[in-house]
Amino acid sequence: MSATKRGIVLMNLGSPDSTEVKDVRRYLDEFLMDGRVIDTPLLWRALLVKGIIVPFRAPKSATAYKSIWTKDGSPLIVISKQLQEALQQEVEEPIALAMRYGAPAPWTAFDELLEKQPDLEEVVLVPLYPHYAMSSYETAVEYAKKIHRKRKYAFKLTVVPPFYDDAAYLEALVDSIKPYLDKEYDKIVFSYHGIPERHVQKSDVTGQHCFKSADCCSVDSEAHKTCYRHQCIVTTNKVAQALNIPASKYTFSFQSRLGRDEWLKPYTAVRLAEWPKEGVKKLLILCPAFVSDCLETLEEMGEEGREIFLHAGGEEFTLLPCLNVHPMWIKALKGLLEKAQ
Ligand SMILES: C=CC1=C(C)c2cc3[nH]c(cc4nc(cc5[nH]c(cc1n2)c(C)c5CCC(=O)O)C(CCC(=O)O)=C4C)c(C)c3C=C
Ligand SMILES: [Fe+2]
Ligand SMILES: [Fe+2]
Image (tube, rainbow, N blue to C red; front, side, top):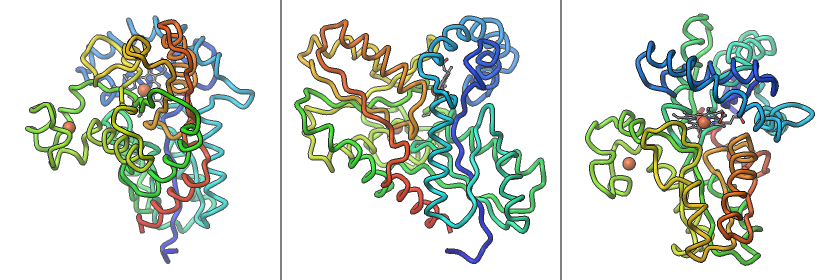
């Protein structure tokens, strides 16, 4: 352990306060007005989000949230709290939880740590995203930094980088998948949350790598530090190789597209309707862009995705759980904190 008086903040995306349409509306408004999520000029974004997307989406999203809501609230929040508690059993430094949207806000987390340790010297921020995207990792980090700056906290803020290729994280994923490979399956799909292709290009620090060639993600580049697609491919291939899954039996795709822009392809929802026709009848599917089960895994994949696949002639659809509180994931997080010293 370091001599510095450290605290830890685990930061996830956040959920609405309840499944009531008004709370979902407020949450979607905060989320989609984020310029790193909908990256259009402010006025156009406000018209689009407040005038079109939120009014239409809020009632539908509220219904979707109702189908997964637990007695203790949103699965994402409940599981993130369980993760905080499980990690706290293993780590001496105080740990607080923060969300990018909704509650608990980062300042609540910072203040909670200061209450426990008034002479706090450093806070290590762990964005709970394995892969870099401006709409997930980057917005969480920039928001936490803004609050740290504006509120003039005296402690130093250190940020854990994306951990898509961290050996212990990959081992945890491998261990979580292993039991599902014992039964017969035709294909295992790594379905990642999608993002607009434009976002990948915007994050390209070289300005001349991403999407400039068909194999850009497998050609070494500085751009990969912030290339979501490259990082998803690395996670997929490393996990599949560690499990000895032949190339013909695994693939990756991207889910949760919103709007009409070109997003990363292939689209999971489109492929789910095609796979059965290509002979893929027994499907295993996991969503490694999320470390905690949430609306996008439980409802979008577990309910909508299942329906699409079975309706198209699929026979078995098995959704694997996220890492949630897997002991090897806790160990991996502990390792990431040690590396951040
Ligand atoms: C991997 C992390 C995520 C990325 C990247 C991401 C990008 C992204 N998301 C939207 C729009 C929506 N996402 C929604 C839910 C949602 N998204 C993530 C993670 C990432 N999003 C999570 C964990 C969740 C679930 C939250 C929960 O409470 O369980 C939603 C809200 C639900 C809905 O109405 O579908 C929206 C909207 C965009 C536009 C985007 C990139 C541009
Ligand atoms: Fe999302
Ligand atoms: Fe790339």
